[in-house]
Length: 328
Image (tube, rainbow, N blue to C red; front, side, top):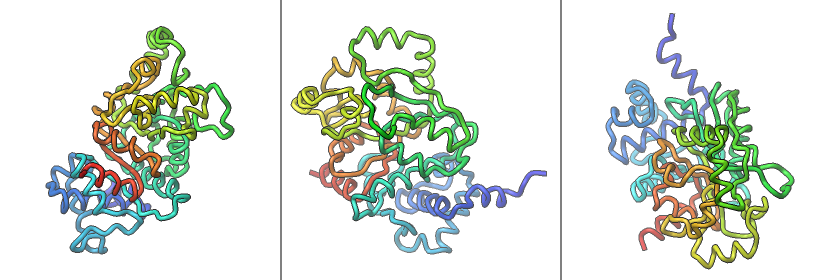
């Protein structure tokens, strides 16, 4: 005998924080973005019955009054403003005063959002780095059993960094009780011909195809500074960094350095970068960027304007910067 739908729904959303996030997401879509319950059902993967129940519960428990009020550090008004301005599917904006705790708070919210996706995808793509390493710590145990987590860009570094930030796919998969498909190549190669040859290898080509097919891409955005994980990993050096800055680069997305127009500023470097093409991010059902801090403001702005991001998890200062800059 199958379980009653109410029992199944209650079991799946047993964690209060996860249920609160879903209530906020559904309430924003219904009240502020004026979507119908059928629209919300299609967009979130929930049934209409589940959408209706979440809306009713949101009113009953005070999440919805005249305005949407999240029972957390989230700022729904800023989230809605970002969604309207940049056409985002979802925005997670966290009110964090202390810069030292911002990464923890934002990555925790992003992890809850990923664990709440419905229907839960069987294939998810991730990049690597410090931010996603932190996000992996917050994933709910067994959040998506059997999932295949594929690495979207090369991750073999040429320099030791101490604590590894390259095994993100493994960490996501371990938390889910799933499997990781790795891309065992450097992120940036020395010659274009080397990249072309590797892409023709059947093993590498299969991993790249999985990255293209994944409906979810979860990644961070790299700053243009000495603290860049690409510099610490040995992929770029100070003269190259200065040249990228001179050419107008504002940061990188999975090793691809872009300007404010969203286009690569150094085509010859981009041609040596192995991994998911930037244009493929626009085709993802969920293109989730997770980033915090003033040093990443310009790369976030360029990325959302170019349409590479449709779900953004960030801090309030970054959200305000985006709205002010885009208005100007």
